[in-house]
Length: 119
Image (tube, rainbow, N blue to C red; front, top):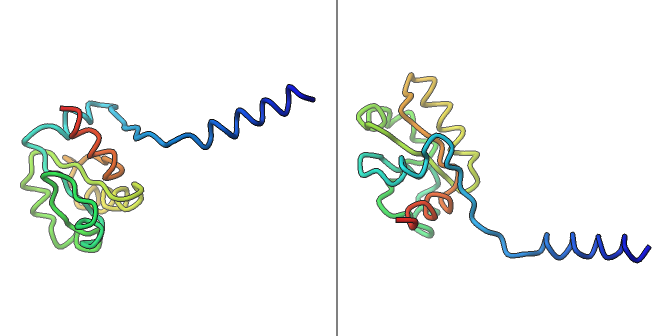
């Protein structure tokens, strides 16, 4: 019984540990984000963009993606991101529907910030 309680105590303690920013480097996301040729697009609201800016990113809110397709077409490489990854995923869908395939999902602004600070 004591062993079971100790196990649950350990699980609880580790679940309360400070979160770390983990980022995805599948298919070279780090290199893509750090490339000066990559356009970083924050699809959050302008307020969120101002409150938690990402260096060198431009703000094109999700609702404005279709009005800015030429920005994406004219970019060699683009990474979209947001707060949780959901809006970035929706932006990816809109872009793919419009045959824009040079775009990667960077998930969250924290992820992109962490990658940029690896330099």
